[in-house]
Image 1 (cartoon, rainbow, N blue to C red):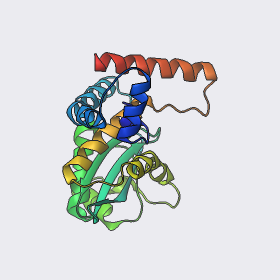
Image 2: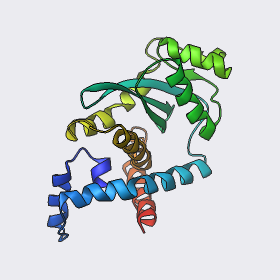
Image 3: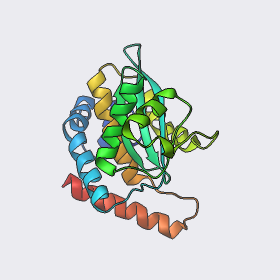
Length: 212
């Protein structure tokens, strides 16, 4: 949880656990997130979908550049109006086929949104014409800042990991990272300190149940 959630190195986690009396190597931490990360992500996503902790009111879609061994790839991400990361998908291209696969993957799990906020990339328009919801696309300037700001936690983690070397590892990590981020991310602006502490304690208790 600490490695995926925070922009820390594997050796940082090794040192933190050593202070708590747990003697492991950094490779053990790597093994843990590779072996258990997707399992935890599935449990978190399953729980949130069952409890409908997401919204079909408005989705914000955006793609970001990610390098794998120096080769440019694209990470497509969908978030709702409350910064809930709905889907993350890595492709080698940024064309209509890639956008279509990404949209179908998201809609298969969450259904069709009432509005889709995107930038002016033509691939979105072409893909949504195929799906049949082109009339729901919104491309007004500044409206997609929510999706762009949601990239920041992943960017911080990407820098600490010194980029990615394998395509499959990147796809696995973005799924785990987005689920863990959703689980522990709470809107702190309108909430009191008491509410923040209660939400934090509830998230940690639920995580411990998944880990058990």
